[in-house]
Length: 262
Image 1 (cartoon, helix red, strand yellow):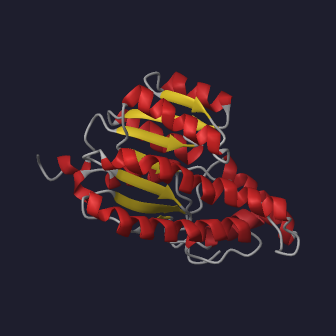
Image 2 (cartoon, one colour; image 1 turned 135 degrees about the horizontal axis):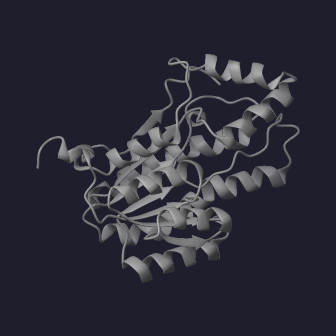
């Protein structure tokens, strides 16, 4: 195998992506499918699952709310039934959470953000690890955020969960290293798309600014002066599952054009 070939993940990997039918999750799942992987995505949106399956008809799709423990258990039942194992878990599911001062954030909003962004990552890892231990190409990739390395005023529930994911990843890398399971976090920055449009809109309202001005301020925070794409994040996920990355674990890898502050 040439050094260039080592940059491509091996074909036939069994890959599970949570919230994998739209956005960054779909970009990652689609990239693995195009690289010859056996892809399973779960998502809370039936319409998004249908659209993903239409684009990738060989994929397996499961309707699931990751904040529901029984739904997560069912996802892994489907994984075992269809693929008899797992090589790559992409712990991707997450929500933006509320925008507002800590005194305005209700406990229900806080708890919902933790349930989806953090507790779901625990649940997927909990079920995945026994299967990953039986794999010869085991990887876990957890999606954090640039808000997992920077403070993020008015978005404390979101930032708290994204920082916690880094702790989860670094701890699991130590715990699972002896089993040759690599665990890394990806930290997307300001990603083009509808979700970011909503974040910018909410932030503009919070600060009483026009939306174009708020968008301009977001771009000014980035050293490269451009947003990243979901495909940029997907390419890094593919690399982490290639043999070229065989000694990369326990890392929090930003894909963000170097966001300087939030």
